[in-house]
Length: 394
Image 1 (cartoon, rainbow, N blue to C red):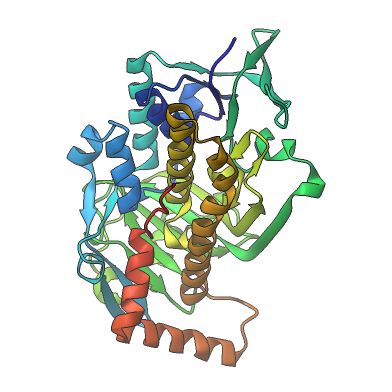
Image 2: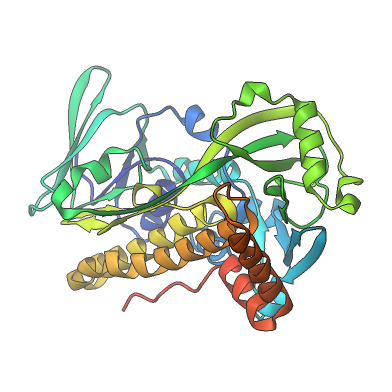
């Protein structure tokens, strides 16, 4: 088998890259170790930055997103019962975010790829990149008990934090940066109307809480919990009661509760590997970086990686600009670190840290007071939340 770009991983980043390349006339094949039903079953975030929305439109997969997605012009922050709205649209000169579930993004991209006749090989086992520093790299994999080989020009590693792509890069070449937080998020999904038409990020002495949504009738709520907690110890009743304790009374009084569709605990971590490329292998999304979900940056950061790599590859194939290939990591990492900073800032601003001394707590409260009472502070939160601009590829 032969293609121009081999993409490892059929999550949203791999599918989005493949869709953009296909529309540009660049042949690509996606290899995915799981079945399509498994990929669609992953419950993930649903807040899309302006840049991600624009990229979906450029990829030609925005029809359902534009029809069903919920435009949000602001978010609400609460601290000690105080409520502050961040007017995203006004503070950024018109930018907003769109609430549209990652599962729906993935489904739309799968359907577009199927309609285009592009190749995705699911349940491809033991995927391995080879010769990434050579003139002709290739990928081997197993399917139906037989080993196959895919020759290509370039390899995009879109296979997540635990995937094989990053492991292909020699350890002595990589530099890792990591912060593991001493808590996780307990999430609950329910078919209940959201408590607010905008997301609410709430600090409380008992821990952080987030009120999010997937639609006008489906809500997603989160509670900060110690890493020692177990999902099975949290009944629906216990979750709803704890959520009410952490929200301002006026919000808690409006909360509509109901049976959970799904509950899970996700640990929080910050992680970046440098560089994001090695020879003709390029890391995209979670394969290269993880952010705490507090800043709503995970999927959006993967989309910005996709945008950068796509624009470089398009110029390589259309104009012979091979010198741009070596710029991918530097361009991507500049935006990655800014998103890491914002996610770290929001996590520190709104969570309870068990190790914090009284001085740390007062500084946290002072940070909140400054950023929510200063136009410059509010603008900083707003422009980071809607997403910093993509760096042009020139």
